[in-house]
Image (tube, rainbow, N blue to C red; front, side):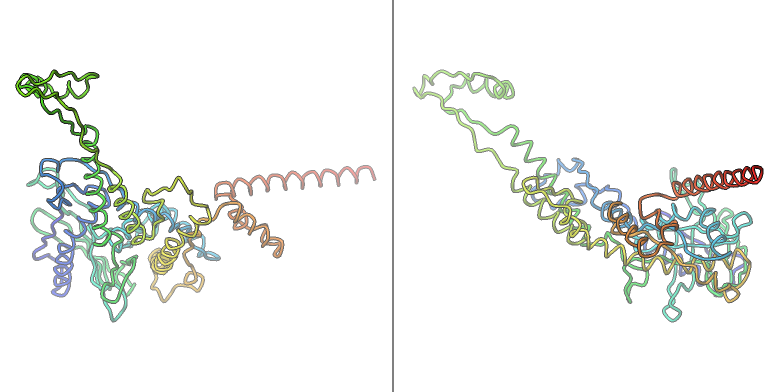
Length: 469
């Protein structure tokens, strides 16, 4: 677990020192909670964590039960939030496209979205960069913290761990080496020199911290959002792990059902007990009557246990998990082979997840618009008030979270093109009928080549007609 201990930092004012200490305290407070969310997302929950001490003996706690429900709850929603870049016009569109490409924002957004859903929020930080104009980075709450300003409706100040180094005291652990402090008028780079920290100030004209959060499921009381892996969801994962463990143990006992043999002699009893496995797998079990009692041995087998109660409980827990997370029942592994679900029914089941994705996109689009405005101002070295209207009008674009089939979108595109003929010549039309950006670029290049050949052919024919005339 990362520990932040700054002490007195050279170069900070009293107010900045107070901010830094408060941010470090917030960071430390949330580390234990973030570690729990990591544990459930990665599926590292063990039987020791969930055992109630009733049905599972202590000696069987080492059984490993894999469960990816935590990862599924996060990734299924994140995969429907497909950031497709920014939409703008004029020179602003070219500048923004370069910022997106240089910062690999499309790929970085996917990772940031997963962290946002896992922890409840993720932080974007900006800084001036000679090569790209502005560098945009994302930090999870496992490496950053911030204080919320309710009056301004934004971050008041923030902290992000930029770089770490191996810890000399504890092998295999890392300690912060470079930490950035974000205030309204500066980015203060804190660098560790042994046990002391030194500050280097980089002032800016943004009038707010160069830090913006993307937040999932925020409330008035929780402005930095709530995780998809909240306590109720984690309890259902615990329940599933217990069920699988109990079912595994029950299956082991059901594989070797208990048998009994009554009325045997002492010698026969010793022979049977000395090698139980041989007696179990033998084709013939022979025993003479007991000479002392005259009783003939009787053989029997206890009723074999059933896995059906475990299956029923597993189905019930999966249904509860589906309801709590908005996943379809198929996503959590429940398949009804006797009565397969139709495609329309599956689409209807996914509507809850689609609505969640639309909510996620709406919130993230607003954050991304703020981020790209600050990025443009930093790249041009101007204040936000000096941005042009074209730069202010840039907005984020997301693909349809319902993910309709190509046949459906192509049919819709053709119908629109029949009413608006110019639409057929746009990139959006080609996207709707199933082409990606690489295909669209190839198509347009080849269309230009064909038009060039046609133009040359027309010029050549015109020359031939003039020569004949």
